[in-house]
Every structure is written in structure tokens, then in C-alpha cells.
Length: 454
Image (cartoon, rainbow, N blue to C red):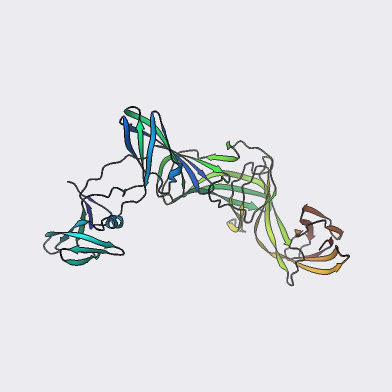
């Protein structure tokens, strides 16, 4: 009988390993929240009546309760998922209490000796009973092999789903196995090349597929779903980028309910423990501009000037924008230096963004643009009203003038601003914004009086 070496040279199986079926025509739908739907079309040869069918190469993280097997004239009676994978360590663990064969080879003569041994323990090392003596089996490079009579029934070379079915008649039956699995996800990443002089940006969008399911999906039709589908662990939150205005435009991308679909143009193999990147967005010369922002909390005062935030603003609209929906991800921004080489200047995360939206992407603190805030006066007007005077001093060390968007937060309730040195806009229920011009190598001041309940 032919033997098969496995994993380490001192382990031998004396039972032949039978060839098993493999994946069929695969379709994989991957969601943003680290979950995927796998649909595997295979043709089974079934006898009439009850039989057990095995599906190797399913995900090692399969959620068995989500499994569905469809085929004409068959019904599922029982299913089992065998995820204890064949390895030298697992073989020894399963052999505890059983008898194995130890084969030793004399390095000088090449002669082999065989002994029967009972496995007493496999906890951090192999303890054997050979006759009346106790011996520890060491992996010290000496020519020693362990021979097993068979593979334990619940050990598999690959993750395997076994299904007991009832078939109305014998023959070949096309089937479709469907299941959900974590460990297979995708993220979006964007590379923006911003040209401040021309007020334009090139945007490249990448999809990154990550497979940690323990299984490779070969030549699969792959569909990506953008949106936070319930039932998984949502990894996406807007950490930096700001949606100034939500869009109201409809695009041409396929939709599934309230989600957008991004099918890959060609079939692809998603290997286990692999990251794969595919381009899905490539826009040249979209309008974009750089601004400076300074956000101050209510009664915020700083003794030393703080840097304003450098922000890139652009649109996703059809006209004058990127013209697409943007799945949640990270935007990394580059600018060309004096030599024409692109250099990284910062990054921000964005949430799922509909077409027609206005986005603000912070890239970092401005070196030369600073703001100092002072609470100049605060007095009680009555039992329910207070008056607060704030002064904002802006400085600009750049050789060209800049405009800083000063945003004062914390304005809840019926806040009134009777006096302001620069006209502003109430951009939200709790925030006021002023666009303050600051001359080149100069300073500017903004004062505002707030009439509040607190």
C-alpha cells in the first residue's frame, strides 16, 4: 500500500488519501463589514435515496447555519462542518491512547527498526510508552518516522462541509451551495494628486480585497457591495473627512436595495492570506481647492496660537466633480514639489458618499497660518441670559494672502450674535462660520458678541 508523507518527515500515513472534489463555478459577493456570500455551483453524482456528499474547499470560517444547498430532486437531511484540519500536531493529538509505529533508521548502516508505541500525551511534546519504558519523542533531526494506520474521520486536509441528502433518483445533479463567511472583506482607498495652482485634482480609486478565510476562491465572479449591511461588524466610520453637503444625484451604477454594487470586470482568484487591489475610479482634472479651517469649542481660549487645519475641498457631482459615488475609505493626498515629484501631504477617512456631495478632506496642520482665541468678556445679563465677547487673532506667514474659515461651535439653543466684525453664516444648529481674509505676511482679527442662555 502506497504511503504519503505529510508536513514533517517523521510522520507517515499508511492509508491512501482519496481524491476529493473541488470548488465549482464560484460567485463571491463581498460586503464592507467583513462578511461575504459565497455561491458555489457543483455537479454531484448521487445515488437514489440517502447519501453523504462532501464539499471540500469551503471557507474555514463558514457560518454553517447560513448554508443552503439547492438542486433538483434532492433534500438536505443533515450537514456537518469539519474544520479540524490535518496536520502532524493534530494527528498526534488524535492518536493519544492509541498505538502507532515508530520507525528508526541507523545513520551509519541505513537499517530500519520498527517498534509499537502507545501515545500517552501530546501536550507540548510527545510522550510514548514502548514496552515497559516511557520515552519522549523529540524532533531533533534524527531519522525517525511515525507511522499511522489511518487518518481520523474528523480530520480533513481542507475545510469540508459534508451534507447528507435524500435524492429522488440517481444521476448527475447540478447544485448550488450558498453560505456566509467572515474573513473576506474589501476596503476603498483613494490617491489624490492635487494641483493648487490650477485648482484641480486627479483621483484614483482602489479596491483592496482581503482574504483570511483559510480558503482560496479560484476564478470567481466577484461583486462588491458598498454600504453598511446589517449583521456584520462595521469597520467604517468617518474619522477625518467631512461631508459638507450630502448629494442628491443618481448615477449609473447598479444598485441592490439601498446599496451600490461594484462588479469586477473579470473573474479573479482571491487567494487565502492575500490582499488584492483593483482600480475602480480614475478621474483627471476634477475641480478642487485648498482652504484653511479653525474650529473652536464654546468658550475655547488658548494662550498660544494654534495652527489652522489645511483642507482640500471638492465635489462628487457629475458636473464639476468626480461624477461618482464614493465607498467609505481613506483618501491620501499628494502634491508636486518644485522638481515635479509628487509628495504625500496627508490623509483622511470618508464615509459612504453619494454623488453630488461636497467633501472637505483635512490633510494636516498649516505651518504658517495660526489662530489665537481669547474670551475677552463674559457677563450675566439676567437670570437666563449671558453675553460673551470672543476675539480671534489670525496670523499668516505665507508670501500670499489666505482666507481662513473660522468655525465657532457649541452654539446650542437660541443663540444671538448682535455684533460681529466680519459677516458670518450659521452653518448648523450649533456652529457659526466666518471667512476671514488674512493678508500676506500679516494679521487679521475677528470679534463676535454672543447672547446665550449659558
